[in-house]
Image (cartoon, rainbow, N blue to C red):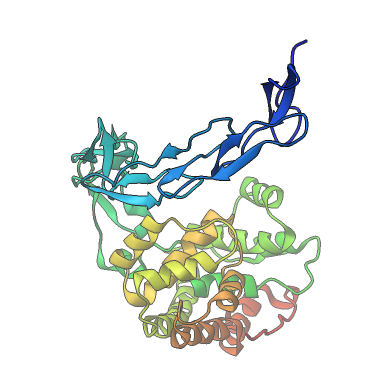
Length: 386
């Protein structure tokens, strides 16, 4: 008869009993013990604890425990001390891996190569040449290839294309640097969204298209906006497109001039927040939806003035999340940010900017400019405050 020894618990083993000349199914000894006496027809298996410096780490039938490894070798540390159920575990120090009984330093990837797989205590670093669009300008055992800076995303011009060892080199005129490459500013977005009536009628977008001054948005673009966006989002998308089409025309200059006054106030509020790169990262992590990449946060902190860092990052977040309402996202983030992770004085500055963009100043701008353009077609907008 063929015995199966793993069907019951504790695990069993076959033992020949000399007293009865029968085969018995005895219990194995558990981890941390050794076999002191086999079972008989009248008693169970007898197991005893392993002495100090000895161990067993599985159910077994041995009458001896295993001796723990000696002290760890040079450049190793004790990851787990010896006890009755585990051997002593030694591991190479940080930055090294075990290679033929010795702890060798992890390989460092040279410029032009980035870390594909970081080294571990058991494995060396794996390097890979940086692909097109990525670079590494350092010798490192930890740094991966980094993406070339997107100059246009910061409103700058590409003056020298990067390669595997160097980043793109960007430059730009004073206006583009001042705006930091923001396609739609917080004031423009607030104004465009404020202009949408509380109750959107079916013909609202047509009324908007017919009454906006300057170059008219073509029917194909309007249809695309209607297909891709909700009714509340359509007006914002249309106004954003209209602004870009009429940017240099006299019909829009007055609106842009008045919005610039709004932007100066917002930049003044946000510039006084004096946020560090880590605090900017905390703010971005608190926003809902897809997150802005850490490298984009670092680049923004370097490329943008203090009053434009938050608007630029919020602009990147809005585009990344399908043109979500930026102010709603910022309000959501401010409710989640807590000290000391984010300074309350800075949070108060951001709240003040949101109140300004939601408040009476924006309503007056809306009344002055938008109602004059669209007349009685525009319904009164509600003023909301944070």
